[in-house]
Image 1 (tube, rainbow, N blue to C red):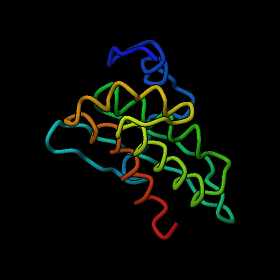
Image 2: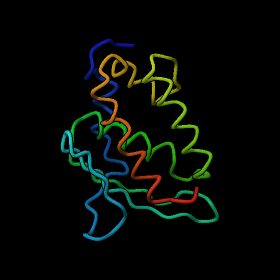
Image 3: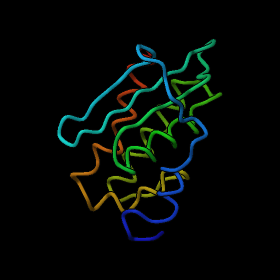
Image 4: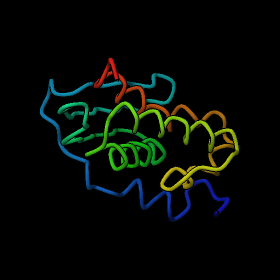
Length: 134
């Protein structure tokens, strides 16, 4: 894995527009990181426990954008509770300097930058608020 913080794999995630969308005002949930100014809005629905139609809008750094894109990618069409828990374990592992499966392995260089961990974790706050109770 590349040691540069903003390496090609991470930037490819940040640029992934698959689940990115201009969301109408008042839809989904919005979470902010007041320390850095990142803001994530996430929308989607649960159908019989399955995450569907996930869309995100991120105003923030490439790390937050990449995390939101990765999270939407791994959750959409899967059982929400299980997929969120698995993604959370993977992110915590990679941010602690351990191994993680793709796409979370792209965040390996962030482990050395503790002040940037919240950027990666912010989309998780959004998805947990969106699907509270999962």
